[in-house]
Amino acid sequence: MIKIALPNKGMLCEPAMDLFKACGYKITKGQKKLSSSDPDSGVEFFFLRPDDIPMYVGKGIIDVGVTGIDFEAEAGSPCKKVLDLGFGKSKHFAAVPNKSPIDSLEQLRNKRIATSYPAIVKNFFGSPCPEIIPLTGAVEISVSLGVADAVVDVVETGTTLKQAGLRILGESLFSSQAALFSHPGRGSLPDILTLRKRLEGKLVAMSWMMIEYDVHAELLEKACAITPGLSSPTVSPLYQKEWFAVKAMVKRVESNLIMDNLADLGCKGILLTAIESARI
Image (cartoon, rainbow, N blue to C red; front, side):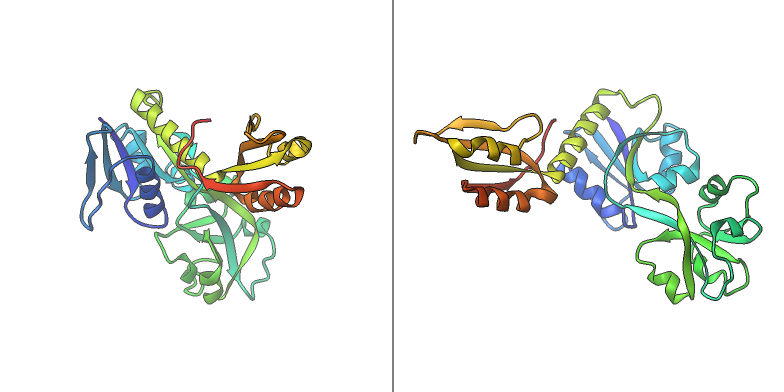
């Protein structure tokens, strides 16, 4: 039975649980429950702090875990990234007071920066590095309290920074998203390979849809050019002569435009359906 760590709270928690459930794993998480077993799949889940997961996986206490790439980078764990999961995307930015004369990241090298991600800040600036004030949270208040000249934090909408009288400075220092990490020596275990295939299949299904339509022979080539599929569309002759049924996978973000183009071309019976899972 393999051990899998999932975030116990924060913006990664619910999407991670939903993804694993969609892949057929049984998970039950109560308010105070720290683990959940799925004997049919040979998996035991542990609900841990997302910033602790790299340590547990890196030391081999847990076989695989889901956490943010930024948490893994901050921990400096030897665990290995297996798969990007596409949710929990975030960026780390520096911010200074609105009235500050600082207008570039380079000008922060001789300043004090408050952050919950000191390793990421050090890695970005290299040498010479600004003086780093490590904090575990609410870093935006540190400037007004005189503790720091700037902050580096995860920014989603920027509202919290604006409310604190801060403005974003320059480019992003680090980009993150949720990922699956494994202990370096266990990524090829059969159960972990199965897990990876299931996750990859669901991620493909979330990005693609299946389109089906009928088309006359004289329009078939143009229709297939609109829906080339992954390798090639499936084309089958219909009972009515010179008519064909076509089936192909299309990218979800383009699916409605593709339907419009097929309808304008003269295709009939155009159907768009979701894909539950896939193996590509």
